[in-house]
Length: 305
Image (tube, rainbow, N blue to C red):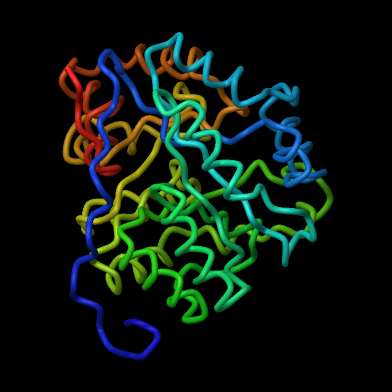
C-alpha cells in the first residue's frame, strides 16, 4: 500500500540505460567509500566492523579505488550513507558519490542514501539523488533504526519507484558495532528479511536488492527472492567459503538469475571473493550471470562490445 492507503500497481519509469565500457567482466554491486568523509560517517561503529572482518581501515581516495577496480576489468557501485538521526554522525554527501561517478564514469556507478526519519526532506533528497544521475538508494536498517515496512518510509519508496531508482536493503547480522557491548545499540531485528517482503509486494514496480546472505534468516531471504520477481540478492559481506550451503544450492539453480556479485569492500576485497567463489566450480554461464549480466539487468546497463 502507498502512503495514501491505496495499492501501487503502476510500474515506474525506467532510469535511462547506461552503456558500460567494452571489456568490463564484472560489476561489484556493494562497495563502500573509504575516504575521510566515509570514515567520519562510520565513526566508532565502523571501527568495530573492521575488527570483526579483520580488514584495513586505511583511507583510500576515489581515484585509488577506481584504479583498483579498473585494473581488474570491473565496475563498482559506490554506496552512500546517511544515519544521522540514529548515530549522530554526518552523512556521506550524495554529491560526493555523484562527483566520484562523474570523475570515473568508466568504473563507478552510484547509490545515494537518505535518513528515513527525515520525512519530506528525505523525499526531496531522493529527487535530488535522481537528478545527480545516481541509480539507486541504500538503506542499512540497523544503522538507521527502522523497519523497512514502516508506513513512515513509504513516501520514500513512492519517490524511488516513480523515479526508477533501485533500492538496496541490508539483511541479516551486521559487522557495524559487532563485538561491542550491546552492539553499540544496534538492533538486528530491523534487518530480518521478512519486512522487505511487504515492501516488494506493495511496490511491485520498484527493483529491490537484498544485500548479504541474510543470516540467520537465510531461508527467509531465499523464499522472498524466489517469490517476488522484483527482489534480487547480492552475495556481499560474507567470505564466499562461508556462504550457507542452502543459499549456494539455490544460486546454482532457481536463483541463478536473481543473484549478484558484491564484496562489501573495504571489509572484503574482490581478489579474495573471486578466489573463494571460484572453488565452487559453477558453470561458466551461471558465473557470468552472477558476476555481470544480472547486475546489468538490475541496473539497466547495456554492453559496448
